[in-house]
Structure formats: C-alpha cells, structure tokens
Length: 124
Image (cartoon, rainbow, N blue to C red; front, side, top):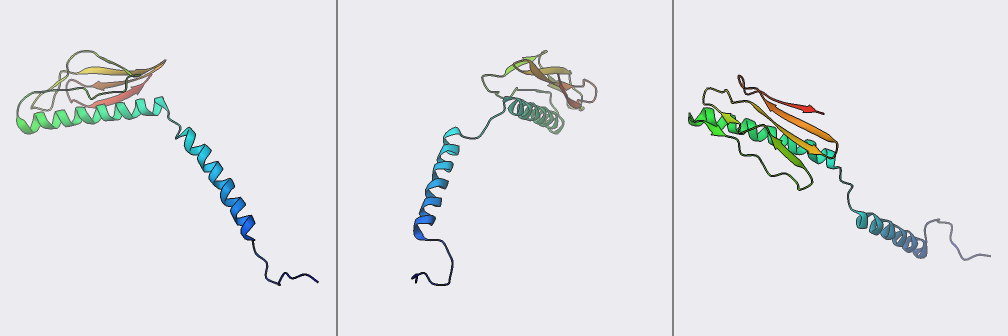
C-alpha cells in the first residue's frame, strides 16, 4: 500500500528543477542581449532626419526667417553625406538637397524638393 493520496500534483523537487532550468535559460538569453540590426537603425536615423527637416521648415514658416538645417547626430558606424546646406525659406520652399546615410553597402537618401520642401526617402 502506498502513502500517496488520490490528489495528483507536482512535488517541491519538481517545481525547483523547473525554476532552476528556467533561470538558466533566462540567464543565457540576457547574456546575449537583444539582437540589433544596423539597417533598422539606419532607417530610424533617416526617419529622424526627415523629422528634423519638417521641423526646420515649420520653424522657418512660423518665424518668417530662413532656417538652415542642422543635421542630427548619427551612430559612428553610419556615414552621412550631404549635398550642401539645406535652407528652408519662410514661404515654405527650400534650397533643396540630399542627405545620404550609408551603412556598409546599403544606403538611404533623404531628399528635399526645392519648390515644395517635400521630404522623400529612397532606399538604395
């Protein structure tokens, strides 16, 4: 005759083993950290740049004075090439230009139309 009662469940030993195994798995995942994608960060930097362009255009219209775009900081591994200074006018136009963000062999060009100051992104 066994002394086990009719209720089934997990023993304390089984629960501790599960907790230890889960702790080991979580520790290994935490050691590697989240996976980073330089290309996703490049696309994020291009979106930030496009936002800075829209903000500069808005400041030029609101203040009634020309505003020169100040390029936001980018990570060290990213190359930023500008065709020249981009100046937004109070009438909503701009001098136009392109800023290219390059990550290894891939790049994104952020272009400002001179007449409408429309910003567009082109992956290359």
